[in-house]
Length: 261
Length: 261
Image (cartoon, rainbow over all chains, first blue to last red; front, top):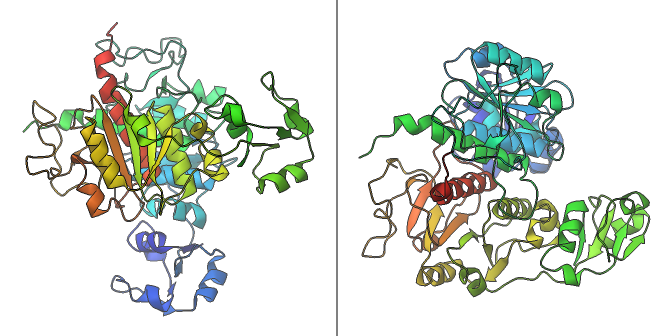
């Protein structure tokens, strides 16, 4: 695929498919920027670049980066205490790109998307992610529910992002894992996102804007978590919710690393 | 202005300019939805709606909502312990809309934008905010630095969102306000966003994507705060950063409200 834009091309050159990146086309202006050694740069007029990548948002740069190197879901689960984001039917490339960028910044080990009814990694998604998809490992799976079952077998806890329940509590007891999936295998009631203990392997599951998590996906989670809504409107955008949740989870996971000066 | 889209029109009908909303145009399908009592609904073909609002993203609904009811910055500062978001040169309507939506959901008391070099509230911004701008109070000011000075005189602490400093610390001492502006009036070094005590009046200042806070605006802040970056890419999107910071601030402000069961 021909990727375009400054960040996407620069990140591709130092990312997971760096070895695949063939000739970079750049306008005379873009060619004068700093390029790493070994890059094959071809100076072309902007119109040619636009014709090659099919977008006017190229910022003077494009490159053939080959196919996107999806990984297998087992690779995501093979690391110690993974933090994985799983997306259920996110179809908007801007949202997928934005979530990938945030996940990469928050140190997530990977992202999982479904093969069908989901945006896949295209040049537009790469651009929307500011090139984050060149570093973040992304797996495409047949079925999100099956992936969550696989993740739970591997020792992960799966948290589904949900709208606040009418009586969603904050605080939580001593054992913050106790409110999670009960012995019948049902996800517990929705709790405020600050309640769970996010140590260990974690999968955060986000549903599509408007619809939210489908029932089968929600019931494959150990716990449903929600962000408080303190205003008049009924929901956050999914990319904003991803950012608030991922940084909340990161903050909780890194608490143990705190060194008070 | 003619606003369009389901959420914008519905939120306008129950929002701050509800009294301004004139005849709602809806397709036959959209007219069958639930509409509040007293709404003057006019059934029109989709093409007429598109022509009236000038966008194909109307979802079968548009309405003339009159001018956007900006408030004065003093109105934002008149409430007890306000939480205000100030934007320095955010020019992308999608980002402005997304930040307004998140701010409204996080219970912010208002948003401040500059009169020049900033996106203003247009129908596209209203749509991108899912109608949140119909509830959230938004002030346009001549100059963001002057507003920050005004906010500080009113007793607010101003936090500027910044990239992590090489030695940004976590943890913090006993008095989490101590690292802030020193006696010479200089903003302290950038600290992790979890360090400050966000009680009382707070202004969160966000700069434009790519450029960040301008020097004059940064130096008008009491403290610069940063989100940790745990991956390879160098920055979060501004709308994602706003979400992570606002929910982090909300969590800190509401800690005192915790009731352990």
